[in-house]
Each structure stands twice: as C-alpha cells, then as structure tokens.
Image 1: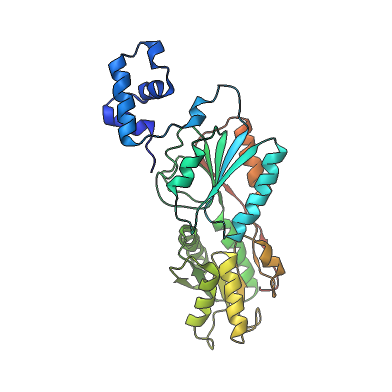
Image 2: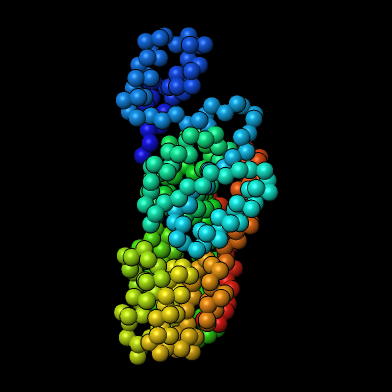
Length: 322
C-alpha cells in the first residue's frame, strides 16, 4: 500500500497537520524550523511517499475530474456500469481517469497513477474485503459501489441482498420449490451474498445447500456445478451469486439434457446484457445504475463526504429460467 501523511507523522511522532504543511511547501510561513522541515522531507523520501496532487488543488476551484477504478474489466456488469457512469459524468461536465485491474488483483501501479491527477472524487466499481486499499487517497473522497472492509473509510453503496433474496424466496414458494442450491465463486462478494442467501432461505424453511468454488472464472463455475451434481436428483432451483454463474449453469444443464425451467430453475444477480438475450432468458436482480450514479453525483456536487453506507433495493426480474 502507498505511504500516507498519517504514517509519516506516526513515524516521527508529530502531527499530521505539520507533515501536511511541510509536504505542501507552507511550513515556513508558520515558522516551522528548517531542521524539522528537512527531517520530514527526508523521512517522506525514505518511506517512499508520493504526493497527492489533489491536495494542491486551489481551494474552491474544482478540477471537474473523477477517477474511476474498475476491479475487473472482464466482468460484463462492470462494463455496463462504466458505460452508464461515463455518460452521466460527461453530461455533468466531468472528465474521467479510468484505471482497472486484471483478475481483481490490486495494482498499486495503477492506483498510484491516479495520484498524479487533481480529482474531485474516486468511484470504485467492485467489492473487496481487504483493509486499507484506498488509504493513500486521504485527500480525495472515495465512493465504492459494492461491499468493502467493515472499517473502510470509503463512502459505500451496496445492494440490499436481504431484501432481494426475500423476493426470490417468496417467488420460489409460489412455484412449490423446496430444495435450493446456492452456487458461489471465489469472489469477495460471492461469500457475502451467500451468507445472506443462506440466512433468508433457511429462515423460510427451504432445504438449502451452499456449494462454493474457488475459481474466479464465474461462467466455468456454473459448468462445474452441473458436472458435480447428480443429474437424476437435481434441486428445484439453483440460485447463483451472479449472472455469469447462472448462465454457465444453464449452458451445462442444457448440454446434459436437462430442461430449464421444467427440470431445474435458475436465477442470477446483476441483470447483465446477456441475461435478457440468453435462451432461456435469465431471472435475475437489477441493480439500479442510474439511481446509484445520481446519488453519488449529488454527494460530490454538494460536498457531502461523510463516511457511511447506503443500501439500494434490487428488483427481481422474472424471466424464462424461473
């Protein structure tokens, strides 16, 4: 992780404001001794500190630039979201600096490139339970769309999975489903979502089975699930952690001669573009992109950067797979 002014202050046993004054070049104006300035500067160099240019922005003059961090460019949901986000930001006069990771592996090199720009805010697309990923951006408000570490200081917007799975449980009851398998991949959000689903479905009296795979290749996880089960004793419904897993389940089921939804019902999460186009089309939950983006823009423009979490409802979209 990148070195912050807070860490430099802790190393020297001085205040963060003193370190900030020195590194911004204003320490002399308040009478800080030269030897103290030299000590802070040399310590910052030794610790590998990279200055955040956002801290040097002129007060009251917005650069109208927002950094966007995408956890996985191969994820179709993120691709859809980036398109909506880009259009909305441009319509409000913002330019964007876009960075992303490969296979959701955090790249400090990509993150450090954001610090070379003056930013109004950073918007992160994706869940991650690691702590301190964005601590280096102490001068820039960071918004995360997805789940973060419980002690993360970003401003989080996440789907209300409890409400979503309650909608699905109610639907499956009307379809006389009793046995439900939940399939998750090796992603941070999959575990979080699986825990919520388990709580809801077991609470509603379903025979619930959680089946997890370590792979992050979500479509393959769906295929692997079908290969792992007894095709003569399938569950009534397969609930998947995201749409890609669900599409893999459908593909695998049809290849093995199972009918969807007659023999097995399948549901996903995210409502990616392929969900409607697939055959059979996928029952899934829609994340309200425009609502989320509008809320973030409001907070950026009103300078409302109080830390906290906001959940949003995800309506269930019933299609042919269920």
